[in-house]
Length: 150
Image 1 (spheres, rainbow, N blue to C red):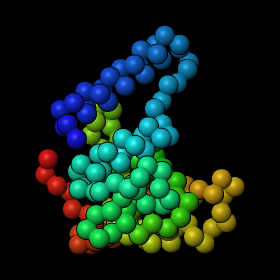
Image 2 (image 1 turned 90 degrees about the vertical axis):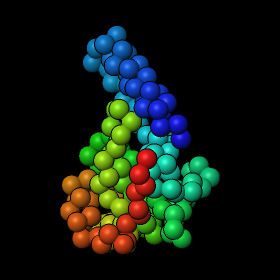
Image 3 (image 1 turned 180 degrees about the vertical axis):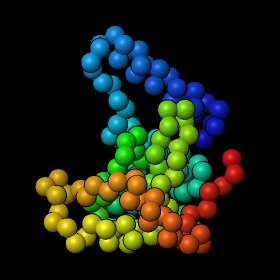
Image 4 (image 1 turned 30 degrees about the vertical axis):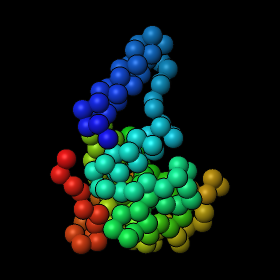
């Protein structure tokens, strides 16, 4: 990843969003869905040395240190899970190309928060970033993916 160019590209995306929202007051042009997911995967691959799988692979997005990893990225306050990953990494993306890590640990701990609930119609359980932050405090350092210095 080109660490100088990546933030520039994100700033260009968000600059276009800002301009469109000024041009069309009351309309929102929020980047979301696949774009945010792919941006999160790219950041995670670079910062955590995750080897990415084929795009849109079931459950896991890549592997690191012998663990299968699901990467969830959001600009909002929650993420959605439809299955139990081996390891879960949740990042909240910033407009400047940075991110905040909200969870980095065993997927089973997060899955326990939702597995007992009836499955939503869309098949995706919603989990708030605040819940994930609390849970993250219980994850020992050796169960987290190491973040490399970049």
